Length: 484
Image (tube, rainbow, N blue to C red; front, side):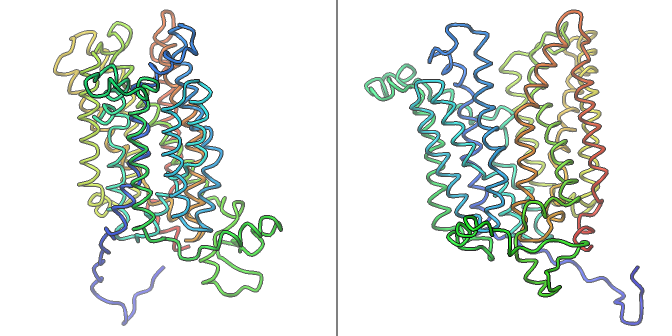
């Protein structure tokens, strides 16, 4: 405990916040657009593409099955490689791997648009997932160029490129409007044999162009954020000699020490091997991040199904345009709230309070599902029902503000940020493979006659309590970990 004495200042010095380095930060925000654009572009026309290539042999019930295989192939490839790319970014720098990811996005989108077989579609998505490790690397880049005073503000901007990925924003119009352009716009594209032969090429070109533009901006404008990177040739030589980790130092009793117990500054500047990075702090942060991510993904999968399901079967009987409008308004509101208030709330209440509130809000969010349906059964689509729907979306806002500061604090050292983010992203990518499909399957099962209609809500509640439990393992102030 700190002891006051004659030299202790009577007044605490105000914290001077570092301005965001916008000359580099805007590039990081721009880097996220191609990745988000890919998902929103492919979603509208993928079911029709599956029908057109004939892999289902006219069996409409198999369309969703093959769409699911395409989605899972991307996440499977990403789960198997993202940790490797994140670790490598600690050693050779972030910039080369971001350039690789953008190149993979551009090539895979052209390949997807030119594919005429289901195998070709799967290969395109696997290629993109295997070489696109940008999710974890971008988070590490933000932590590289910020400090504790401006990191909350930076995180407030980070979701902007992804607003609407699950909320029905207008960007899916690219995929829906530009697919089969020779049929939709014969006066413009009717003479193009290329677009008649490959009717889904045009919408795929749009994210490919964005990725190419981002590649050029990154190559010419972005300054490498890792200052202690090693030459790639040296790393390759070390791998062949099985000495790639021999010069790295490992943690001992919460202090970074070498065999000679010296040169602590050098220790802080060296990335650690994977085994040394799997500290209790990193595992705790990963568990909290993944359980929260699983809950958010399952909730976003269930919500549109709940809205579209008939009231007598447990839903709200809303039509697609109204569902899209609700989700669009919700996505825009969430993004605006994060941008305007996240940093202020963080400064006023602290990271721990925001995270606890966000995770705990999952419980009333789940409870509101059966409440909304019960009100709709009795009163129809009354004002009370719409107020509950609005309350559910308001609570969802807090889910998006869960603690992002703990990852930086949990990293074994500054040079291992990439590996720390990669571990969390790898586990989260694995969860994305099974979580949404499991949630929607349980929802469909619970809606069938003779089954418990609340089964899916029990499932969501279990995940919510797991998220609350893992969040309690985190410190209320992440800086406590840094000071130990």
